[in-house]
Length: 351
Image (cartoon, rainbow, N blue to C red):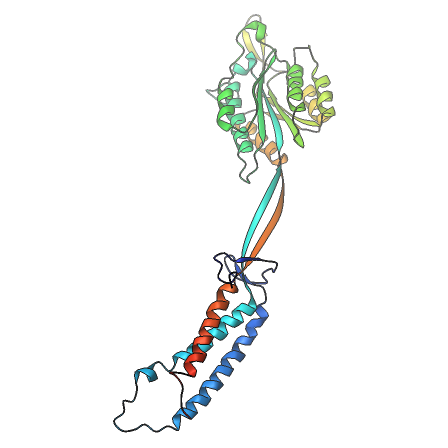
């Protein structure tokens, strides 16, 4: 009896087979077929009593409907209600509680951005130099990866490079922090720090990713020139990345190649850029090479990389059900008991 009157429903081993609404269902809906039979039995029983009562004449001067007569329908209604509740108990109503445990296999990403002096040219977007455009596009990409719309979040690290690489932000999920470090990236102004050290930048990215235990690791390296710092050759770093299972996406972001002319100063070079080394890095590591000649192309490249490197998702479903029939059983017993007592006391009809 304590269990019947408990405030909380008891956990059940049954599973709902007929959904009602929301989190409610029935485990054994076939018992609902007993409902018409119960109603027929009640109707036949009440009809028999009505015929018996009809043989009693109404005496002159006696009110046609006394208080007791006016409530004579109540036992029958209670019997019907008791049957409905009893059938619902047999159908076993349940309340379900479904929980999803979503597991994401994260991606750790190192974003490498070239800040060499040549990034000052404004051929990707009028009014903005290459570095400014790159910072905006890279920042938007990082934010999307760190706040994935499906709930997945990737760890992102940021490094910049010219002659030497510099890890500005270690792996983080803090979008604001990463954007703050990205805003601080500036062009290399001094000659001793200028240059395009793709090999040592990639080596630094590999070193950063080596400490990661993520299943998927990648580096997205953006530059506007060829490697001209030979402390570590780019292909040597690419082989090291391949050994570590790190995919490298290389992006050449520039519309034109500029060169120093002794008479005219900085002029456009009619020769196309040499991107063979960047292509080879991507090939060795299982990544891809891209070339962007304007901002729209650069945004499309990062969007494509985002689509290629989706976070794996696994779902585990847990379902708990609770029996509700106990909350119907007590009212059914009370209704039927009151109807039975009434039929042999104040609602009794003489044949």
